[in-house]
Image 1 (spheres, rainbow, N blue to C red):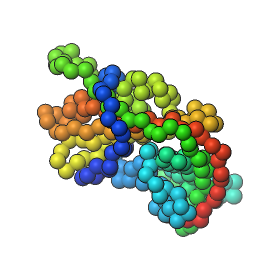
Image 2 (cartoon, rainbow, N blue to C red):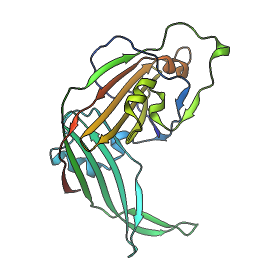
Image 3 (cartoon, rainbow, N blue to C red):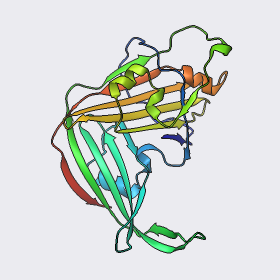
Image 4 (cartoon, rainbow, N blue to C red):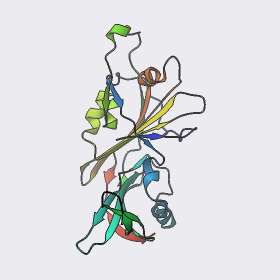
Length: 250
């Protein structure tokens, strides 16, 4: 799912080494953006992020990191809780995180559904996989030069799958992602700054991570400009070691 960040300055792009332009990105898809105040890794509750940092995790530079939508659950005894799952990938670690927060009822809605609020506290369930192997590799992907007549321009297809806007060769190398996210920022000078982050667990010992960044101004049209912008893509294919599992208090 695409996430739209209401920020005036972009996050720092993922660093990558310079490579010659390669084959064209796959045309014809645009992300269906959804407005949200917290995006990417920052959708994980702040107490959970603080607990991870205190324990010495997430202190390095992430290549890619994101959070799935929270899920509210109820057990047979009538207790409620909220699970928020997230992932963080840097050169040395893959972190798979679940933040579990207790909820308590505070009445019912007009439809008779329970209204819930956080009860405070909670636990962070963490699985940490050590990573090793070749360094991340970066490449710049450009569209072929030359104008396209207005009548020949296909109508863009909206998609909820962030990786569908990436070059087709990158999609093929990645395969069906285990996790993916798109984030759009609004730079102060206008236009858009887009990020697409994804990873796939190929096997228990193999992982591929993709971090893509593009930026374009507002002229002549911001949507057309970002569609034509170059992608700067980092791909990381490390070896995955034996995981360790811990639980942290929020």
